[in-house]
Image 1 (tube, rainbow, N blue to C red):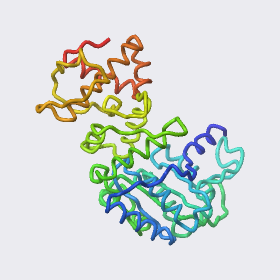
Image 2: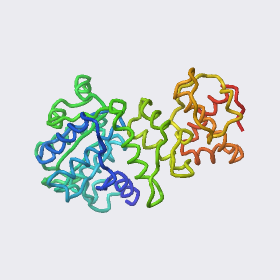
Image 3: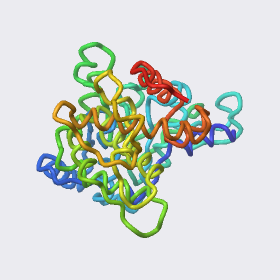
Image 4: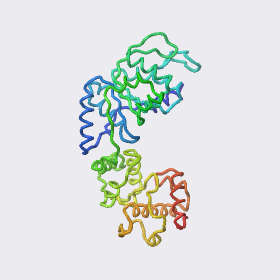
Length: 346
């Protein structure tokens, strides 16, 4: 069915050059060296780390450095769909296997033939499917739903999880035999807050990736550089990417300054209204007094940008959220915090 096909296409991820791993950090360089070494083998790799640390990017990196690099890289998020759909997507079905199965469908294991299959969030894989996946990994063969034929598959599998799978095994949420089958060569990605020397190169790479103009380069002001390095980045590289995309929307020239840096959640700051807010504008120089840290300055500038855009769109929350590149819910949260500081909101 067309709807199913659209979901499959949405979940498949092809190779693309934008997924380059930027690193200066020694730990990450060692990780990349290990990944390139294991890429030359057929060993199953398990990537772990917090959400947003770049597990999928590293999986692409392994694929690009493997003998399978000229074949397809196919990815699926095991947490993104119901169990029945995930089973069908992975293993395929024969015509007539179930209501609506009007034609044979080749699952992702077959679609990734001779290439790489990336199983993201494998810790979310339903327990009933874990046994079926284990058999495919052990025997390198599968049966489509509704079929009886054993089909040989030649696929390199890379799995990833932000959960502690060893703990999940002890909690009986994950099969021990499957865990040992996929955990042949584990690689753990460190969070962005532990690789501060990579933050600015990654930010610059993300700006280049998302900028609309084909030429030119965006520069980060010293204040932005200091702030990006000091922020803890709970959402890791994914959060940094969101922030850089918003900055590109807000920037009117080639310079990214603090007023263009809007966080997913408001940076903690003193809950008192800054005395200079009503008189200053986003273009004013950023000067931190001895009693205000960089986070407080950034939040003050963020308020200025939000209020300026709200005034520009005549108070429309929907239009303001769109221009700011944040969700309506996030905007409501920020406005509530601004109101709590005794500041009038358009």
